[in-house]
Image (tube, rainbow, N blue to C red; front, top):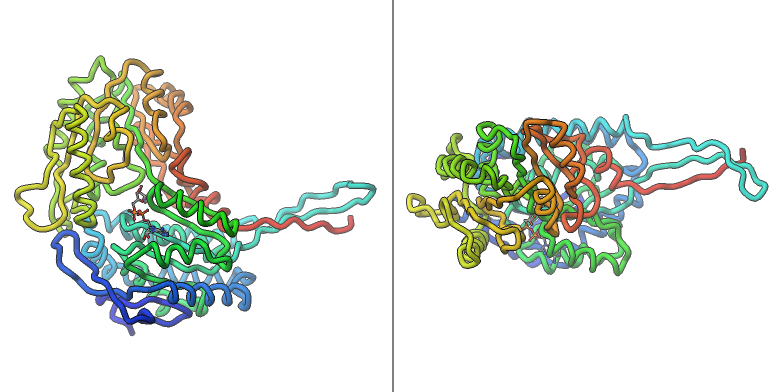
Length: 489
Ligand code: NAD
């Protein structure tokens, strides 16, 4: 039996763990300590080509796509295996991702594993077939049936920020729907994907070629093969809007289905009748996991009439954010994933100051953390929505506070963004908050602290935050084709 407490450093192709054909490897670095914690196979275009060929063959030549009860059993085995090995995964996630350990009991671990059960259940519950009844067309009477069928080979490309959540949100429904998968994880968090592969190998009857993982240091090489290969039917991508644009362009050559979950710059809109003592402490959630979350509400909109009062409260909240060692269960915020990300965040802070925003809290590298890619919880006041720090996704523990005049002005500022992924509204009146919610162009919204997230809740973006939905029945359907059948009535 495999020892899950040691990392899997190899790729997984056609049911076998393999070194890269070139023999090359690259370092995996702990972002909290800057230590190299191990190696991982550095795949090339030849490795990706082989994985695509296996996934294609498994789709075309095995009964995987047509045997839902077998798939259900396999998905349940995967869920049970992850559940069994979750303590090893927890330790690895803290080391590899720099995720605060408290989050591994939720969206960086346990709750994601539990949610996979919902996906497996859909295999029995989903409406795979729909009768349309009779229709007369050119004198011929027919009865019609609509079938839902898997798309084929899915190329899944994931980011580093919540690797287990994103990997399983793609792999779970893609496999449940009957597709085969080639997963390309981010180079910063490759072991999460190879961990899933190990569970597939050890605990499930998933046949060789149905699920494959190709790791690589340079996304441009293997990623480009995956997104342009005609044997791949669909790309399911989560990552930055810039790479999303590239994937859509490259996918157009072979007219692939492209599903995109991209960036965000969501608002936390506090209406003037809100109770600040309950609404504002939640503003600090932008520091969770170093602000490395696409759905975080990184623009705080305060009514001008209560602006000073609001800023004072948020300032106190930010000064008290627990951050540092991700192994410490008290910490909400750990490091940024890499030196590059740390520098990117600090660059945005400099830009904010240059453009005239007031730095109220943080803005630098913490003195007391000499190792690791940490950034202080950072709060900017007097921000205009036209500033770079209000328009661009920083992906760091940075909140910008923007004053507004009235509800119309708040809605205008909320929608003045290329993004539309998430958001929050606080008000003394739920009715008023819901009225405003109707006017905000975004894929998800929490009202008065309510949380929209769940395995059955579709998640995704309006505008340049994405195309399509992950999770929920909408997410399941993304991985399906539609076939209409006509029969003589
Ligand atoms: P990224 O776009 O740099 O990389 C994402 C993935 O794409 C990685 O696996 C990367 O290796 C790969 N990639 C990069 N260039 C590629 C190319 N040319 N061809 C194919 N693959 C390529 O994003 P990131 O820095 O890893 O993650 C942060 C971004 O992800 C943020 O913008 C964040 O908002 C977004 N994100 C969105 C969601 C969502 O659900 N909307 C969830 C998590 C993260």
